[in-house]
Length: 111
Image 1: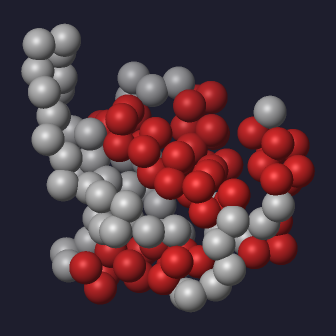
Image 2: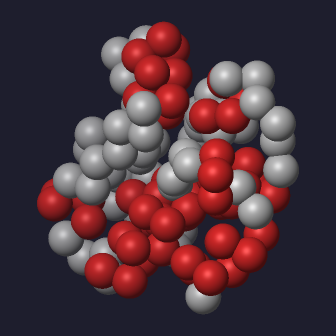
């Protein structure tokens, strides 16, 4: 993965859409809830900080496999200037633990 340096006058067109990076429970046809939105917020935060997809694979199937196994990487070249707190925030949003799928878990972990 390679990030694109941005400045205030640049516009970034992303090809990352909710349908290209769904939450694991969407791919598994599980019940959806607030945790599904938290996942999306984690993906968006990763993308906004790095301009890269957190689960990109060679093709759609590999990307979906990376999502369902939460194969998440924080490469040094992308995160060298990102605070440890921001990385921790993303990690706490991009979890797939159905037993923690409730609002109180996310409130406790994130805040």
